[in-house]
Length: 275
Image (tube, rainbow, N blue to C red):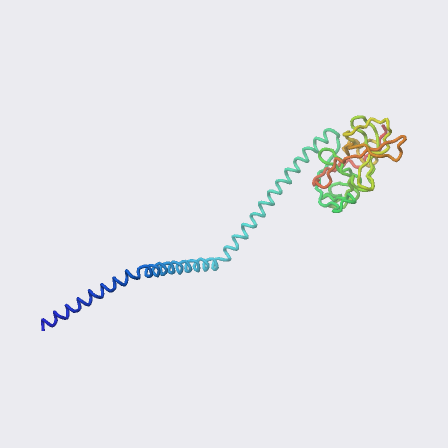
Protein backbone atom coordinates (compact mmCIF):
# COMPACT_ATOMS: atom_id res chain seq x y z
CA UNK A 1 0.00 0.00 0.00
CA UNK A 2 2.82 2.32 0.90
CA UNK A 3 4.65 1.52 -2.34
CA UNK A 4 1.52 2.31 -4.33
CA UNK A 5 1.20 5.74 -2.72
CA UNK A 6 4.83 6.51 -3.46
CA UNK A 7 4.30 5.58 -7.07
CA UNK A 8 1.33 7.95 -7.36
CA UNK A 9 3.32 10.82 -5.87
CA UNK A 10 6.19 10.13 -8.22
CA UNK A 11 3.84 10.07 -11.21
CA UNK A 12 2.19 13.31 -10.12
CA UNK A 13 5.61 14.91 -9.73
CA UNK A 14 6.66 13.81 -13.22
CA UNK A 15 3.41 15.16 -14.70
CA UNK A 16 3.93 18.48 -12.89
CA UNK A 17 7.50 18.76 -14.18
CA UNK A 18 6.47 17.92 -17.75
CA UNK A 19 3.57 20.42 -17.55
CA UNK A 20 5.88 23.16 -16.23
CA UNK A 21 8.36 22.47 -19.03
CA UNK A 22 5.59 22.67 -21.61
CA UNK A 23 4.22 25.90 -20.12
CA UNK A 24 7.64 27.56 -20.10
CA UNK A 25 8.25 26.41 -23.65
CA UNK A 26 4.86 27.78 -24.75
CA UNK A 27 5.48 31.12 -23.00
CA UNK A 28 8.85 31.66 -24.65
CA UNK A 29 7.49 30.69 -28.04
CA UNK A 30 4.54 33.16 -27.65
CA UNK A 31 6.37 35.87 -25.68
CA UNK A 32 5.75 38.72 -28.16
CA UNK A 33 2.08 37.95 -28.57
CA UNK A 34 1.46 37.66 -24.83
CA UNK A 35 3.26 40.95 -24.11
CA UNK A 36 1.24 42.75 -26.76
CA UNK A 37 -2.01 41.44 -25.32
CA UNK A 38 -0.91 42.36 -21.81
CA UNK A 39 -0.01 45.92 -22.87
CA UNK A 40 -3.33 46.25 -24.75
CA UNK A 41 -5.23 45.08 -21.70
CA UNK A 42 -3.45 47.59 -19.49
CA UNK A 43 -4.01 50.43 -21.96
CA UNK A 44 -7.65 49.49 -22.34
CA UNK A 45 -7.97 49.57 -18.60
CA UNK A 46 -6.39 53.05 -18.64
CA UNK A 47 -8.83 54.21 -21.32
CA UNK A 48 -11.72 52.90 -19.35
CA UNK A 49 -10.36 54.80 -16.36
CA UNK A 50 -10.16 57.97 -18.45
CA UNK A 51 -13.71 57.47 -19.64
CA UNK A 52 -14.84 57.16 -16.06
CA UNK A 53 -12.97 60.31 -15.06
CA UNK A 54 -14.41 62.25 -18.02
CA UNK A 55 -17.89 61.01 -17.21
CA UNK A 56 -17.44 62.13 -13.63
CA UNK A 57 -16.26 65.58 -14.77
CA UNK A 58 -19.18 65.90 -17.19
CA UNK A 59 -21.59 64.94 -14.42
CA UNK A 60 -20.09 67.56 -12.11
CA UNK A 61 -20.31 70.20 -14.86
CA UNK A 62 -23.90 69.26 -15.54
CA UNK A 63 -24.85 69.37 -11.89
CA UNK A 64 -23.07 72.74 -11.46
CA UNK A 65 -24.23 74.26 -14.78
CA UNK A 66 -26.29 76.99 -13.17
CA UNK A 67 -23.39 77.98 -10.97
CA UNK A 68 -21.02 78.17 -13.94
CA UNK A 69 -23.53 80.12 -15.99
CA UNK A 70 -23.97 82.61 -13.15
CA UNK A 71 -20.21 83.05 -12.88
CA UNK A 72 -19.96 83.72 -16.63
CA UNK A 73 -22.80 86.25 -16.44
CA UNK A 74 -21.12 87.95 -13.48
CA UNK A 75 -17.81 88.14 -15.37
CA UNK A 76 -19.56 89.55 -18.45
CA UNK A 77 -21.40 92.17 -16.38
CA UNK A 78 -18.17 93.13 -14.63
CA UNK A 79 -16.43 93.58 -17.99
CA UNK A 80 -19.30 95.79 -19.19
CA UNK A 81 -19.08 97.83 -15.98
CA UNK A 82 -15.33 98.29 -16.36
CA UNK A 83 -15.64 99.30 -20.02
CA UNK A 84 -18.39 101.76 -19.14
CA UNK A 85 -16.30 103.14 -16.28
CA UNK A 86 -13.29 103.57 -18.58
CA UNK A 87 -15.48 105.35 -21.13
CA UNK A 88 -16.83 107.66 -18.41
CA UNK A 89 -13.29 108.48 -17.29
CA UNK A 90 -12.36 109.24 -20.89
CA UNK A 91 -15.36 111.53 -21.34
CA UNK A 92 -14.62 113.30 -18.04
CA UNK A 93 -11.01 113.81 -19.11
CA UNK A 94 -12.09 115.21 -22.49
CA UNK A 95 -14.64 117.49 -20.83
CA UNK A 96 -12.02 118.78 -18.37
CA UNK A 97 -9.67 119.58 -21.26
CA UNK A 98 -12.53 121.28 -23.10
CA UNK A 99 -13.44 123.36 -20.04
CA UNK A 100 -9.80 124.32 -19.50
CA UNK A 101 -9.56 125.55 -23.09
CA UNK A 102 -12.93 127.29 -22.73
CA UNK A 103 -11.60 129.25 -19.74
CA UNK A 104 -8.55 130.21 -21.77
CA UNK A 105 -10.73 131.48 -24.63
CA UNK A 106 -12.93 133.34 -22.16
CA UNK A 107 -9.87 135.08 -20.70
CA UNK A 108 -8.81 136.13 -24.20
CA UNK A 109 -12.18 137.22 -25.57
CA UNK A 110 -14.60 137.64 -22.68
CA UNK A 111 -17.07 135.22 -24.30
CA UNK A 112 -19.28 132.97 -22.19
CA UNK A 113 -18.92 129.36 -23.35
CA UNK A 114 -20.86 126.13 -22.79
CA UNK A 115 -19.48 122.67 -23.70
CA UNK A 116 -21.72 120.22 -25.56
CA UNK A 117 -21.55 116.85 -27.29
CA UNK A 118 -22.47 116.24 -30.91
CA UNK A 119 -24.98 113.40 -30.82
CA UNK A 120 -25.79 113.19 -34.55
CA UNK A 121 -24.54 114.42 -37.89
CA UNK A 122 -26.11 114.37 -41.32
CA UNK A 123 -24.79 110.99 -42.55
CA UNK A 124 -24.77 112.17 -46.18
CA UNK A 125 -22.62 115.20 -45.35
CA UNK A 126 -24.57 117.23 -47.91
CA UNK A 127 -26.47 119.56 -45.59
CA UNK A 128 -23.78 120.10 -42.95
CA UNK A 129 -26.41 119.66 -40.22
CA UNK A 130 -25.58 118.39 -36.74
CA UNK A 131 -27.34 117.97 -33.39
CA UNK A 132 -25.98 118.61 -29.89
CA UNK A 133 -27.09 117.24 -26.52
CA UNK A 134 -28.12 120.56 -24.95
CA UNK A 135 -31.06 122.87 -25.59
CA UNK A 136 -33.22 125.67 -24.24
CA UNK A 137 -33.17 124.21 -20.71
CA UNK A 138 -29.50 125.20 -20.50
CA UNK A 139 -30.10 128.61 -22.07
CA UNK A 140 -29.14 127.87 -25.67
CA UNK A 141 -30.83 129.85 -28.44
CA UNK A 142 -31.02 129.99 -32.20
CA UNK A 143 -28.11 131.87 -33.77
CA UNK A 144 -25.45 131.07 -31.17
CA UNK A 145 -22.02 130.36 -32.65
CA UNK A 146 -20.50 126.88 -32.33
CA UNK A 147 -16.72 126.51 -32.20
CA UNK A 148 -13.97 124.05 -31.30
CA UNK A 149 -11.59 124.45 -28.37
CA UNK A 150 -8.99 126.15 -30.60
CA UNK A 151 -11.52 128.77 -31.84
CA UNK A 152 -12.13 127.02 -35.18
CA UNK A 153 -15.60 127.92 -36.45
CA UNK A 154 -18.02 124.97 -36.66
CA UNK A 155 -21.23 126.85 -37.46
CA UNK A 156 -24.26 128.17 -35.61
CA UNK A 157 -27.45 126.90 -34.01
CA UNK A 158 -30.52 126.94 -36.26
CA UNK A 159 -33.24 125.73 -33.90
CA UNK A 160 -33.34 124.67 -30.25
CA UNK A 161 -35.64 122.44 -28.22
CA UNK A 162 -35.70 121.52 -24.54
CA UNK A 163 -32.83 119.06 -24.54
CA UNK A 164 -31.13 119.43 -27.90
CA UNK A 165 -30.39 121.83 -30.74
CA UNK A 166 -29.87 121.48 -34.47
CA UNK A 167 -26.93 123.33 -35.92
CA UNK A 168 -25.67 124.16 -39.39
CA UNK A 169 -21.94 123.91 -40.07
CA UNK A 170 -19.81 125.85 -42.53
CA UNK A 171 -20.13 122.81 -44.83
CA UNK A 172 -23.76 123.63 -45.65
CA UNK A 173 -24.30 124.44 -49.35
CA UNK A 174 -25.31 128.09 -48.78
CA UNK A 175 -22.21 128.99 -46.75
CA UNK A 176 -21.07 132.57 -47.20
CA UNK A 177 -18.73 134.11 -44.62
CA UNK A 178 -17.00 137.47 -44.53
CA UNK A 179 -13.36 136.87 -43.63
CA UNK A 180 -10.14 138.71 -42.98
CA UNK A 181 -6.61 137.63 -43.83
CA UNK A 182 -4.90 137.22 -40.45
CA UNK A 183 -1.53 138.37 -41.85
CA UNK A 184 -2.50 141.29 -44.11
CA UNK A 185 -6.03 142.19 -42.83
CA UNK A 186 -7.36 141.93 -46.41
CA UNK A 187 -11.14 141.43 -46.53
CA UNK A 188 -12.91 138.91 -48.78
CA UNK A 189 -15.82 136.46 -48.92
CA UNK A 190 -15.64 132.67 -48.38
CA UNK A 191 -18.21 130.67 -50.34
CA UNK A 192 -18.78 126.99 -50.92
CA UNK A 193 -19.36 126.17 -54.59
CA UNK A 194 -21.58 123.46 -56.09
CA UNK A 195 -18.63 121.04 -56.22
CA UNK A 196 -18.02 121.41 -52.49
CA UNK A 197 -14.89 123.53 -52.81
CA UNK A 198 -14.33 126.53 -50.55
CA UNK A 199 -13.40 129.64 -52.53
CA UNK A 200 -12.16 133.04 -51.50
CA UNK A 201 -13.98 135.54 -53.73
CA UNK A 202 -14.06 139.29 -54.42
CA UNK A 203 -10.30 139.60 -54.03
CA UNK A 204 -8.75 142.56 -55.93
CA UNK A 205 -5.59 141.66 -57.87
CA UNK A 206 -3.50 144.10 -55.87
CA UNK A 207 -4.62 142.50 -52.55
CA UNK A 208 -1.90 141.05 -50.33
CA UNK A 209 -3.02 137.42 -49.98
CA UNK A 210 -0.53 134.57 -50.14
CA UNK A 211 -0.70 130.78 -50.22
CA UNK A 212 -0.79 129.48 -46.64
CA UNK A 213 -2.46 132.56 -45.15
CA UNK A 214 -5.05 131.94 -42.39
CA UNK A 215 -8.51 133.46 -42.72
CA UNK A 216 -10.67 134.47 -39.75
CA UNK A 217 -14.20 135.82 -39.48
CA UNK A 218 -14.33 139.60 -39.88
CA UNK A 219 -16.50 142.18 -38.15
CA UNK A 220 -18.69 142.49 -41.27
CA UNK A 221 -20.51 139.24 -40.41
CA UNK A 222 -24.07 139.39 -39.11
CA UNK A 223 -24.04 135.70 -38.06
CA UNK A 224 -20.57 135.12 -36.64
CA UNK A 225 -18.30 136.68 -34.05
CA UNK A 226 -15.08 138.27 -35.24
CA UNK A 227 -11.83 136.35 -34.91
CA UNK A 228 -12.97 132.73 -35.48
CA UNK A 229 -10.66 130.54 -37.56
CA UNK A 230 -12.19 129.51 -40.89
CA UNK A 231 -9.74 128.33 -43.56
CA UNK A 232 -6.23 128.37 -45.02
CA UNK A 233 -5.39 129.66 -48.52
CA UNK A 234 -4.45 126.60 -50.57
CA UNK A 235 -3.91 127.78 -54.17
CA UNK A 236 -4.93 130.37 -56.73
CA UNK A 237 -8.18 129.58 -58.52
CA UNK A 238 -9.90 130.82 -61.66
CA UNK A 239 -12.06 133.94 -61.56
CA UNK A 240 -15.07 134.85 -63.65
CA UNK A 241 -13.87 138.47 -63.77
CA UNK A 242 -10.22 138.26 -64.79
CA UNK A 243 -9.91 142.01 -65.27
CA UNK A 244 -10.22 143.11 -61.66
CA UNK A 245 -10.70 140.20 -59.27
CA UNK A 246 -9.11 136.89 -58.45
CA UNK A 247 -10.12 133.81 -56.46
CA UNK A 248 -8.34 131.33 -54.22
CA UNK A 249 -9.13 127.72 -53.38
CA UNK A 250 -9.26 127.23 -49.61
CA UNK A 251 -8.70 124.38 -47.18
CA UNK A 252 -11.22 124.46 -44.28
CA UNK A 253 -9.60 124.20 -40.86
CA UNK A 254 -12.64 122.25 -39.59
CA UNK A 255 -12.52 118.45 -39.95
CA UNK A 256 -16.24 117.95 -39.61
CA UNK A 257 -16.22 114.13 -39.67
CA UNK A 258 -13.91 113.83 -36.63
CA UNK A 259 -15.43 116.24 -34.10
CA UNK A 260 -17.38 115.05 -31.07
CA UNK A 261 -17.25 117.92 -28.57
CA UNK A 262 -17.93 121.60 -29.23
CA UNK A 263 -18.24 124.90 -27.41
CA UNK A 264 -21.27 127.19 -27.70
CA UNK A 265 -20.70 130.94 -27.44
CA UNK A 266 -23.71 131.86 -25.31
CA UNK A 267 -23.37 135.64 -25.75
CA UNK A 268 -26.02 135.19 -28.45
CA UNK A 269 -25.85 136.60 -31.99
CA UNK A 270 -23.14 139.18 -32.66
CA UNK A 271 -24.19 142.44 -34.24
CA UNK A 272 -22.40 143.92 -37.25
CA UNK A 273 -19.63 146.28 -36.29
CA UNK A 274 -18.22 149.10 -38.37
CA UNK A 275 -14.54 149.09 -39.11
